[in-house]
Length: 432
Image (tube, rainbow, N blue to C red; front, side, top):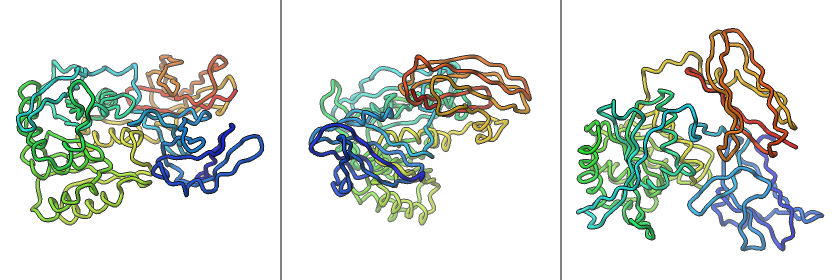
């Protein structure tokens, strides 16, 4: 069944358990049906939504946490890498992978700024898009937990920006990544800065925004500024929009930890409608769903312009990074971009057979009623390119590309065909 999962571990141990997003990383009841078979094989059967994506680790002997040695999928989290369960209908967000064909923007080093409101210094980094010198009046995305959103293994925002701007799916924009970590490292101040902190809101609206507007080529109206945050950063986005609507009209809220300070609800339910446009999401598996649903009801009752997304995932960077393209296109979709084919048809015109395969397979491009010029690229799960080829495909012509994986390890690879009007991707499963 597409919703069934069998966890397996082979090795000597007194006990084996699986902890992760699916049991809040601690629920022993989840592992009550673990069985030990002959040959030191441990097995656990579960069901999840067919399109779920969840982080986990294996716990040996009640205390030793390890990655799943038989699972090639990894995701960086706040405490290092986790193994990842990807159900059959889960679609990997290809936008988070760096591409050779994109023109890259520039991400600055850490820049210090002293805040009079907070009475201490902070660091921020700035992303400027390709061709920045020829652009002007750019919208600005301000991001809390910026040190993680900027990380290509976590939030991947610079990579997604490069890809979407290059593909003309969004307008060029500037991103400001604000770090809660003290300059020099050591202390993370997010729990105090993001918990409806009036001084931090003053810093954002009265100090950082004017500084960015005077330094970079920004569009300086509140309709061109968005504040993005996740978890406690989600509270920060909602709070700042409530108390600084003259500065921020756009709010992006991922997996908000509204439970941590329920007063945030009153700032929306008990006050007049503000000129805000809001994007909010949550996972449905041990995430912040109940609080997000409560706030969604408030938004709806008050008449806010908002969009709301639920995904069968949890409180992790694998979830949040996969939504960056949705956030960016909702706020800043490039309406001048015209797609020749519907996206689903474009993806289905490329396929591999056989797949799974042992050693050799063939990548097929089905005939389409218009010519295509682009690049075939194959990468492994670490993002390393193992094959690249430029192609010119006439209208109505099919193409077959033989692929030799004899010298590649077993595992999953991702192929992509990139052209000016289509992007077609899929998975290759190499089994030796």
